[in-house]
Amino acid sequence: MAATGAAWVAANSGGYWKYRRALADPAAAQRALLMEYVRLNADTHFGHRHGFSTIRSVADYQARVPLASYGDGPD
Image (cartoon, rainbow, N blue to C red; front, top):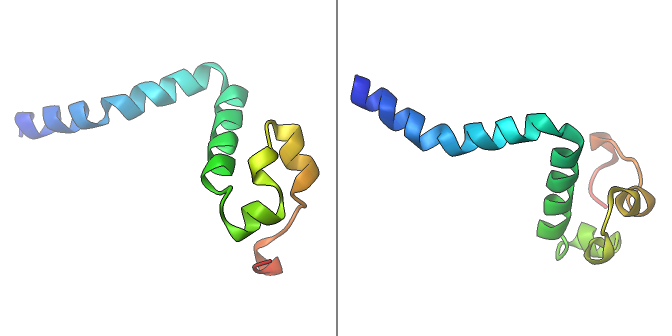
């Protein structure tokens, strides 16, 4: 059992430390996540439609992507 626990800790320690770093500056962590999502989705229909390839900041994202709810459906 101890070996299993040690393996679990070892497998998850990277995520734990990433989480701890994010706690130091949550706003920066959220900006980084948003920019990563924008980058990963730049070549999607939605990304093309809203100019994801030119988004460089949260303000850019807010200016280009309108508020929507799940019920609004696909664009």
